[in-house]
Image (cartoon, rainbow, N blue to C red; front, side, top):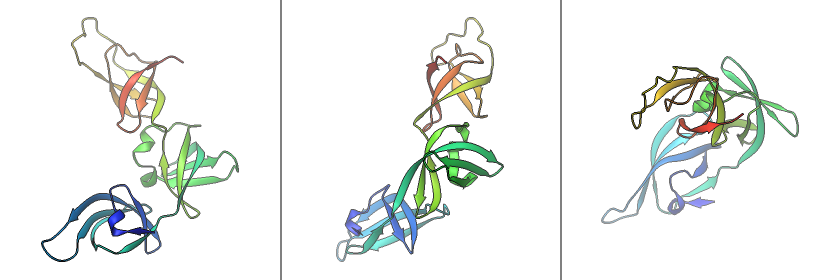
Length: 187
């Protein structure tokens, strides 16, 4: 159980039977009276955000969340199918729950799926993914200006800025947290 003094950005708490994550946090101590904790909360199931102020001494339940390693299989429009690699059960996540991760998901990728109770509510991708470039402009000799980049379309459809020497058909490593090119990889 948490108290209001334990609140901080990134903390996951349970309010009215639903999991919330604190996305912004500030502490206010007025000249007299109790300390105030101003939080911006995001519902981890619905994605709805709101602000709430708590006084010192209030108590909160810890959100009982579990992560399971699962393999991404396919998507059928707005639903993304993941399979538990040990029990072979399948879970479906909506496009909103996958979020920006859909830009980097390719079949057979092992991910961590976040569960609240028996319900899948989110996905955590590996920090780095190796993806193939399917479309990129050729390197023009003399394009050596420092810091120059060109757009490249990956096999997932995501467009990333790459150095001019990276060519179509090559594999690159992409940081899934920032969406940026990291390095070329040999496959």
